[in-house]
Image 1 (tube, rainbow, N blue to C red):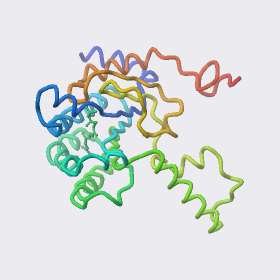
Image 2: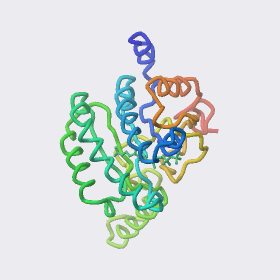
Image 3: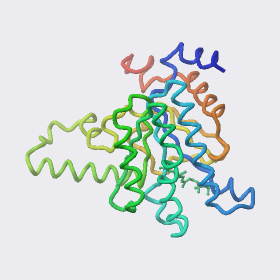
Image 4: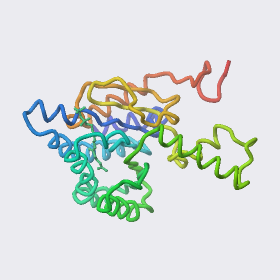
Length: 252
Ligand code: FPP
């Protein structure tokens, strides 16, 4: 195992700097076992912990997890209430271990609708880990790309009206600064578990050149080896970013 990590790290450029994950299949994992759907979400927390630590071991710098989408409010209230308690539960159980591993917790999304107890847990974790220099564990919470883009446009228009922004200066880099992930590199690898082949309103701007990896494995079953498999496949892909040779290469 140590040999494996050494081998992967020896070619650091093949380790994705930023991995984003759509954690899907919790409900089906539970249904398959004749359990209530929420027990799949509870099991999902263990997966988050093991995948975070494995990502850190592999040398991934940022791990963004789609924890709750702007569309998830459409679920039955009882399930939404359960989902909103998960951050607190996760952090109560695992924050100490994350801190021991130098992990920095962040959150992105529209926090206005998040219950106070959820916000408190998340804000405390963000505060307590802000000086950590290891992997950034970025939770997308009440996140949706369409809403992110609408907010970015509104904010830009306000800045133009307030004469803080010259419309002529608007370019791709500037628009990226108005998104919810301005300080993060775009994801290199997107993993979606649970067998569905779609992006579900997740990081649409940031995923423009991301390598996509889909697996049928339900999120609660996803383990360290599954992550390594995705990273191995990523390492075999040739990224050209629209050119012939890769980023900064021939752009014809
Ligand atoms: C998809 O499964 C998963 C979710 C909607 C939410 C997963 C969220 C967590 C595990 C929360 C963790 C949050 C923090 C901050 C620790 P699904 O219910 O759509 O599964 P299905 O497609 O099988 O029905």
